[in-house]
Amino acid sequence: MSDLLASGVFEACFDFLASRRGLLVGVSGGPDSLALLHLLARWALAPGRPKVFAATVDHALRAGSRDEAEMVGRAAADLGVPHAILTWEGPKPAARLQ
Image 1 (spheres, rainbow, N blue to C red):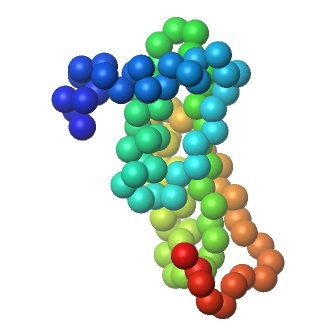
Image 2 (spheres, rainbow, N blue to C red):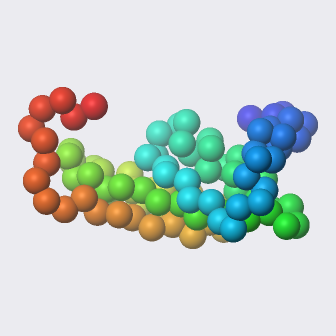
């Protein structure tokens, strides 16, 4: 990924977001969403770009979901991105979780 970041190629992918007041990225803790968080955080460092915020839903559908959400919070903090954990309260599905 460092070659991609160094080349600046990815920056054009986010240009359509430059006029926004802020960006909220949902981060599950998987590699795809963590990569997106890293790319957006780096992109947003340039002057005039919107601030990036991150959120993770702790769905509590399986053991460890809170730990994963907290890991995302630490990763976001390392990037200087504010992060919130949104806790799913209430009934949960018993089947077809994906």
